[in-house]
Structure formats: C-alpha cells, structure tokens
Image (cartoon, rainbow, N blue to C red; front, side):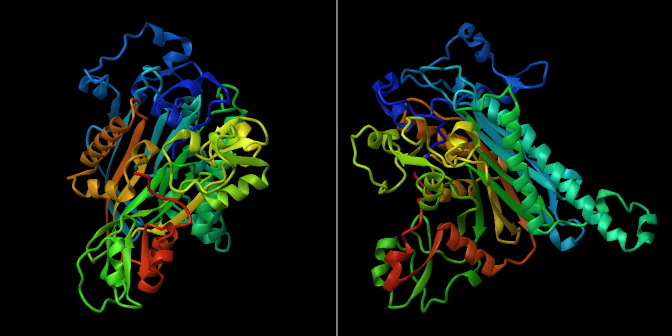
Length: 505
C-alpha cells in the first residue's frame, strides 16, 4: 500500500539507500501539524521548511534506539482535546435520528534524513449543519504525497468541502423551488425558503454532488499556480451525513471502515452450534453447510462486531484499475521489472512492503511518475495516463448495527487490519480514547518495521441509531467488500479468494 507520488528513477542515487526507507518510497508524505502551519497573505498554507526555516530548528530528541522520545512524539500529535456529541441523521423524524460522538487525532511522521518535514495529512470536520442541512455533517481525511503534498492536501481540505456544500445547497434550493412552483401559495408560508424546508436529495442527486466536488477540486488544484501538483497530490476519503444516510466518497488509498454489530438475521442457518474456527478448519463442515467468515478468518456469530470496508483502495493491485490505466496509455510494473531484475508479469500476490516489487504507474516508456495508487487529486502528469480524480462512491442508511465509523489515512492501515482497528475501538470508552489507541498502535507497528514513521491521522465516530438493519443491503455490502464471506464446504476455497487484497498487516 502507500500513497507514493513518485518512485526513484532508474539509476538514481536513492536506489543505493538501504533498509525499509527505500522499500516504501514514501519520503514525500511528511509535515507539520495544523497548529504549526503559517498562513501567508493569500491565506494559503505553507511550511517553514519551504523557506528553509527548518535549517535553524534544533534536531528532535532521540532515545538510545534512535527513535523519538515520548516528549518529541507528543509535540507531533494534535487533534481533539475531548470527545464531542452531535445529533445527525433525519432530524425531521424521531426514529431517523443518529446520536454520535466523535474525535480526531493526527501525528506527524518522522524521517531521520528529513526530521522537520511537514505533516501531509489534513482533515476536515463540519459536525453539524453542513451545507445548511439539519442533521448533516462532513468528516474527511486528506493524505498528501510528493514534494508538495502538504500544499495539495491543505488545498483539498479547504476546497472540497466548499465545493460539496455549494453543489448540495444548489441542488436542494432547486428542488425547493420546484416544490413550490406548482403551488404558489406555499411561497407565502412562514419559512418557505428556509433550509429547514428544503427537500432532501435522493441518493443519486447527493452522489452527483460528491462527484462534482471531487472533479471540481481537482481542476481548481491544477489551475492554482500556488499549488505544486505536477508530481504531487493527495488522497481524499470523505463521509458525509444526509437524510439519515452516509455517503462515502473515495479517491486514493485512504479508507473508511464500519464496525457493524452482526444480527442473527444476517447469518445463514446453521444445523448446530460450533466453536469459532480458522479458515483452515472448515474441512470439518458438512457438505453444503454455509457460514459467514470475517477477513481475519473467524466464523461470525450474532453479536460480533465485524469490520466492513466502506471504501476500496485504488491501486494497481486491482485488476479493474490496471485495465483502466493501460487503456489510458499507462505502463504498470514494479521498479524491479522496469530495471529488468524481474520478468514482466502481473502476479504480484499480496500487498508487499518492498517498494521495488510494488506495482506502479508509469508514463509509457518513461521512468516517471511511478505512482503506487491509481486515483488522486492533483498529480497532473500521472493524469495523462489515467490516474484521475473520479471518485468511487457508496451510500447506505445508518442503522442499528452501525456502531463504529473510522476514517483514516494509510498511516493507520499500513500495519493494522480493518478488523484489528475495529477491535481496538470496541475496547475504548469513547472516540478520543479510540483515536489515541489507534495512533499509538499504528506508531508502534511502524517502529517495529522501519526506522521512519508515516503521518498518522484518524477520525472515529461512535454511533447509535434505532433504524432496523437492512439485512439484504448489508449482505450485499459484505460480499462486495470481501471483508466477510459466505463459505460453503464444496467451494469455500474459491469463495475466499478476493478480487484484490484488503488488509496488509
């Protein structure tokens, strides 16, 4: 995984570096915290390093292992100081209300060779009345990459919400006008034009607003001369609430995952109770016996809290994305394949942490840009070969079983599975506790694997809704996202082969 804007060119001196720093090639994803950013006169974010001010900063304090001290880590961490409550959903209906608590946390990464690099993760939270909608909200994370990734993510953090709100308000005002057009007397009613009276948007109408906001943000980034997005860009993962639904808009490889409480109605009928088993133990099942299995290989029971992906990583590992990229003129191969060290093939297997064997996107026969993702905001050079900002969008109604929502950059997901993340959250007393635990757990995993750490950002919501679960919708979502699978003895091996890897712990 990893959202790397450009790989080192063949023969580059960067290839002589040793260890996992080279293996991930994520050198561009760094930055200063939101509270440390400096505003220039135009209101744009820029970092002290851009003006070489970082040279005057003292080096961070390290412990005997060469890692940041606890005090230095604390300096790099920012976000919520307390968990906050919010009422979301269809507030016009008592049964449609969603009670939620939320928190956010981000931690700037550490690169030994560039200790003062910026935090390229940004986040946006409008917890209530987003686009003037009662019960509407927006929670989003942007993960920049490349030399100017911090500029791209900061731009998107401001521009995308603005454009999305604009399109939503425009669409709802138009629907309200159409509602009153056939009955002029309605215009005389008190508050006839107030946002509280605006009709809700349909799923299709709302998703179109999300699409237009993504594409518009990408165009605006290209047109802004103050944002260096030629070989830099950002992911975008946004979860917006409207009319009791959540809509997930995804560009790149950040993720949104749901902690869903399994209902007995969603489980296939079973002839008898059995203990939880690993996937390899299903040879003992009777012929034709079906069950639901989590991504971690556990048989699910009623009451279990299971992780369900609400987004899918957009990377060259996906066969459909590779086909789309190649149709646009891209060459998809690893660095080792490009250098002739490995033969050309597309059998890359599971997501690999070795940067030289990660499939990347190249412009024809050239050795750039080498992106490890297939969609992004920015990255104008890669856009010529199919790396575009077309979002993948999913909408679902929030129901009783939807208890935990996590929106995060891949600094969280690099070494933690979706299920592990939900399990950690389930052990916490509130979202702020969950954010802290997730950041700590991710940071520890990074230290185990590398001498550097990525930027780490997560938003966590705990939710409560009385809307009954939509069993068929959840079954479809579960199957589509390959997080939980229906296994039948005579074909369970085929059922467990997903179209793309989801977790890479």
